[in-house]
Image 1: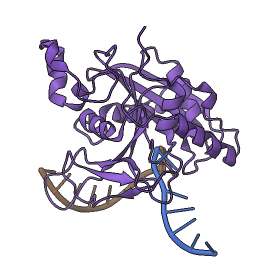
Image 2: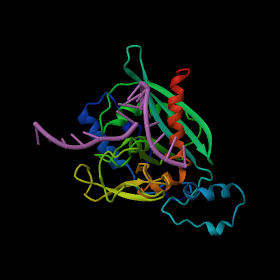
Image 3: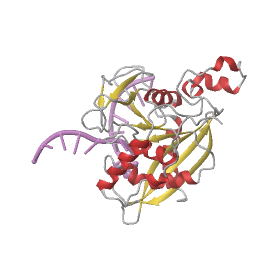
Image 4: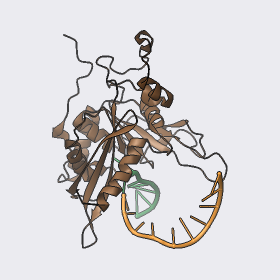
Length: 289
DNA sequence: GCGACAG
DNA sequence: ATCTTGTCGC
């Protein structure tokens, strides 16, 4: 028998419970952070996802297998050929009174650059938006949507933070740990941590480290993630803001940034997240389920 | 009290 | 997140 490469298991017992009090929510996040793995521990080859050119080449001819020795820290057994990457994002529904009373989670699964499945779920909102407690507001809808996903996800890409979080337990980390699926947080703005360099007008493909500061429950200087410039304008006047990418679960900071960069198409957001974003908007407009 | 904060 | 007019630039 071969020894397992990782010991983590799904943790439904750590699912975000919106009925908890604030202190209990924070305590749960400490458990999430303890169970989280912020290093590469997945079964697929990230290379074709990281390198846009290799993606199409992999579909054609199979090169000599001997030349495919891994250089990363990922699990080297049972490699998943065509990893299924899942983008997740939420939108909100308003009732007749005009209040946001429901969350709609949209999930888009992609394989080899193609959408293979889309599912969504709507749940009642039970708690307001509080910076640092986002997973308790949106987690229920996300888990419900994932419940109806038929394909087996190899990687989750969330619209929000992972380890870049006060207690190192952002929404990407929380859901990743509960499902024990490798996950990455992709945020459009920085929640906490300190940038280690200037992010103004970075060129496409570059990244700037984000380390823990006194607002984060981690040793000062701990690498939390990266500000990643996936796209940038050619000329002057205007510039695109970077993405704030961090490990959710079972993915290290470097790989998380590589994947966010490699999965970005024409737009700055990685394609799975961008499509989940538009699907979230599309789904709430039509038959509400 | 002040500052600061994903979606 | 969500609501929206106007405006810049290719």
